[in-house]
Amino acid sequence: MKYAVLGAGAMGLRYGLLLQDAGFPVDFVEIWDKSIETIKQQGGVYQSRDRENKHLVPVNIYSPEEYQGDPDVWIVFVKQMQLADALKRCKHLFNDKQYVIAPMNGIGHIEKLNQYFDSNKVLSGTAMIATVLNGPGDVDFMGPAGAGSMKVVNQNEKPDEMTHKIVEEFTKANLNPELTTNFMGTLMSKVILNSVLNTLCTMFEIRMGEFIQAPTAEKLGRQLINEAFDVCERDNIKLLNTREEEWQAIKYASTTSMPLHFPSMYQDLSKNRPTEVDYINGYIYDLGLKHHYEATTHDYLRNLVHLAEFTKTFNEDSLLAVEK
Ligand SMILES: NC(=O)C1=CN([C@@H]2O[C@H](COP(=O)(O)OP(=O)(O)OC[C@H]3O[C@@H](n4cnc5c(N)ncnc54)[C@H](OP(=O)(O)O)[C@@H]3O)[C@@H](O)[C@H]2O)C=CC1
Ligand SMILES: CC(C)(CO)C(=O)C(=O)O
Image 1: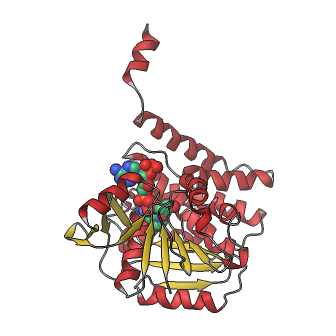
Image 2 (image 1 turned 30 degrees about the horizontal axis):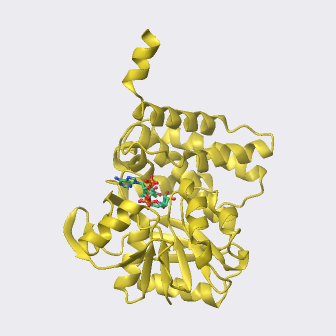
Image 3 (image 1 turned 60 degrees about the vertical axis):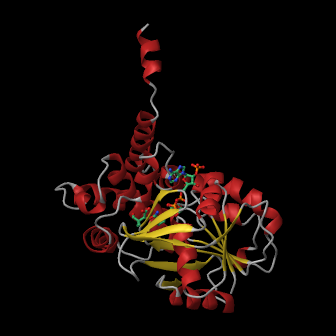
């Protein structure tokens, strides 16, 4: 099938380049001007693995306004905050034959996708695939070839022929997809993992492998997991994991599958950009509120991440102004 990847950042490039390498036609539709300019100018994307073997891979890249293709499947990988604008800029490109899959972190994307795609053609999922964007058009795949895995899930929880074809082609591309039929349970299991790892590693500027060695890691992690599970139970979400399994998944990712990874939230903070925390811990807190339950630890942590964002953009001049 023909794919268009919306977002040529870390994950968009990883998915698109792997599919292209497996022989499928891929176009990249990018919303970040600097990235389009750089990729066109350098004649492709620089791809490396664990910082080694950096090489140039030619790609097709367009702005939404330039693109004229009609893909079978859109793969959407932008930050949650960018999605509404990205979809608006692409709306002339969408039609009712196309499917969309968006395995982004956090929750906030589904209702936005539903403004343009019928829910029967919306797939989401989760990506346990660590990837770093060194800069525009320069992507680093973390882990050996074939590393990482993902879950694929239909919004209507009814896998059809197209779903199976997507899973088959993603398998050929080494993305290791597993099909599930529990929409919210699948998404929330990853939201919970990110609510622990992305926030805590980001604020302390540490890799996942450093976090997990901390004597307090388990206590911190389990408290967040317990609160998030309490919220999900109130919302009748049947999670894929038990509380214990969720902690073990965090432990496994941090010790075995990606210990050297700084979660993607850190990559935002370190470049002085806003994070997705409102779509992760913020989503858990807001969902709790709907059931008159306050997930206070998640709220507190969300605000700590916002404090970290603020300190990164703090301007010394404003302090001088306060002194006067
Ligand atoms: N990276 C990962 O390992 C994983 C990410 N995800 C999820 O995938 C989705 C897409 O994330 P991801 O692919 O990581 O994000 P991206 O790499 O797409 O983020 C790139 C965006 O960051 C901004 N940016 C500005 N300056 C820079 C710079 N110097 N270097 C890098 N980026 C810059 C640009 O937007 P602007 O200028 O508008 O700020 C650009 O569009 C998110 O939901 C994320 O949580 C899921 C699993 C793993
Ligand atoms: C790869 C992983 C799972 C690490 O938490 C992730 O989702 C991220 O970096 O945002």
